[in-house]
Length: 383
Picture 1 (cartoon, one colour):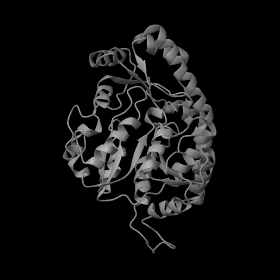
Picture 2: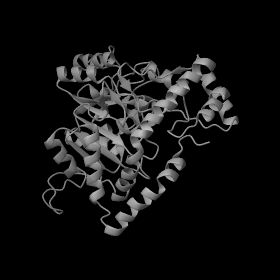
Picture 3: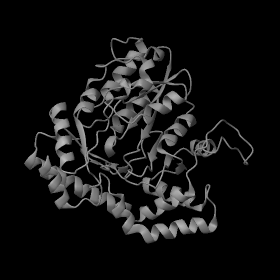
Picture 4: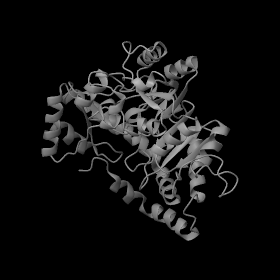
């Protein structure tokens, strides 16, 4: 059994995939070819933003947005410790300080009340109010990165209101939430800019790395397009700023255009798979807690994650399912504040108890649009 079944999707789309890839081989524009622009136009229209800028990965999308917002040394950016390292990695790569803030225990997303507390602690220089890195005490807070964990958009109504009060930017890390909505507004339309990922396991995934930035700001979009090509100006050998080599490959854009033909149908199927899981679990294992989907939110269901009652039961579940030939995953076993890469920030175990508790009890089940009802029944019975 596959944790994420890409084979069934490929079998279904194989003729269209080959047609799209053959077109790229025929025209030979492998860098920023016409498929990249077509994909950007298509996804910007879907999300409802003025601009979509393709790039080499979801990580590069976040990095480019922070670069466009002029984040650098002497700055601090708030984010969650319960996410993949890329979210905080891009802050550190630019010489800024990641300031971690704990998450809501039900949605697993950034807790606005704790963001407010962290900002107050930074203003007062009081680490007793909220855990802070020493390096953040003299830094200027520029903004925050909210993560739409497992496909559930963060509480942008609260976060954007708070950011506006404080004169901060909000970046939406929508690496897992492309296809989600909140009160009818698609993910990737929140904040001052959004980043998504086309890693193969994502709801819309390529056959390699890829990503995209979304923005309604014309000047920011122009800057993003420059930054992704070494800070290019009006021609190839004019560089008006220091940038990166962060372009989206034409071949990946071609794959994504083929997959786009079934994306909305696959989103609907993910809703059906998730609803079926929830119904089955209520009968068999009501002690397992499913991530809460707030009112008005439609999750992209990038993952289907449960909280076991105890860490020991989580490990027992994984062992039982493994013996039954069912794969599982743990996202994320070590919160970022406890990662060796961020040891220099001086955080300690116990600083973010919700994230630490989630990391000890969470487990994810197989989740994809092609999961058949009888397979789901087998998975849940095996719990």
